[in-house]
Image (cartoon, rainbow over all chains, first blue to last red):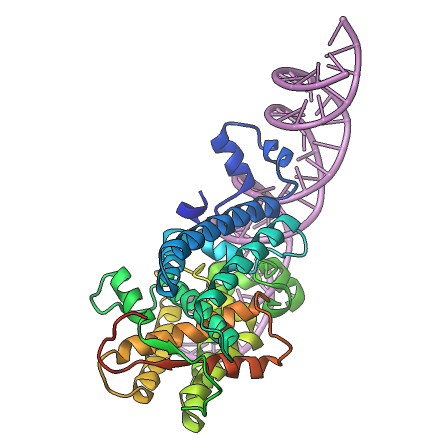
Length: 172
Length: 172
DNA sequence: AGTATAAGTGGTCAATGTCAACATCAATAC
DNA sequence: GTATTGATGTTGACATTGACCACTTATACT
């Protein structure tokens, strides 16, 4: 339901209806609607973490970035739910924990791939921002691919930058 | 209301209440709730376009990026509404038009700053993705600033990459 | 066998988005 | 000077939804 019809269409009563149970059954599993969304988001973070680990094993920085974008494009609604900021982390301790674990793994893998040098942390954040933003812009159909297939396009864009890990440089 | 309490808290009836009118008066101005959100999003795109134009006049690529991130951080809910993809562009022709105009201006300004060369378009998309993703990650409080102030942090991150505008290069 | 716990049921309520019918009032046309 | 029209607002209604409550059923475990 989430992927096919979006978050707002994911109504507790409709879930119950499709499950063939009474309109109140879901409340035995989730105290509020938001809790169900939080659980879905947490599951998404685990998926993303698994995809990242897999990419880390077999490939380099580039592969990680492509895996990130691919995940977002494969589960756009889920991705929006995870990063949409509409689920307050203050409640939902489980979601907070899973998300933090995923981020830690992600930044750890990033740090391992980026040469140890001044500005390495900056470059890590830049790398993450790049793939995150690229995924979202692609999801919004706001970018002209210029005839290329999506994977090819992603590869080209990710190949178009280099990270500066040496000492600070004057602005271009 | 949008910025202070989020999109879901922006209820038509509440709007009417605060405006001191009856619960149905808003329907004389917007056929559905979604139309009101679309209007707010369109207004946001005009603001963003204006900010970009201003940055383009006085500064370079770096200034444009900083202005983009600054806009997002100054109006997070608005930014999420604009790019959240929850407003179908199929309806709301006005929104589609304003958004397209803003994007055209943005990519035009980008193209003018990026050296004419193979891969220039890729670099433009990468630049946009970078600032877009950085803004969203910062909004989500998912990045450790490392003690720096936000503007400083943004500057550092944006300074940590270079664009490859020459002929294609082998992957790193 | 007996009981505790999880899961499900039906009833209810307030809030919301939306629709239809009616009212008001200024500008315009005749 | 009056009638018409369009924009704006109002009242009343309806279905849907999230949430709460008391009650029942089923499963598991002592």
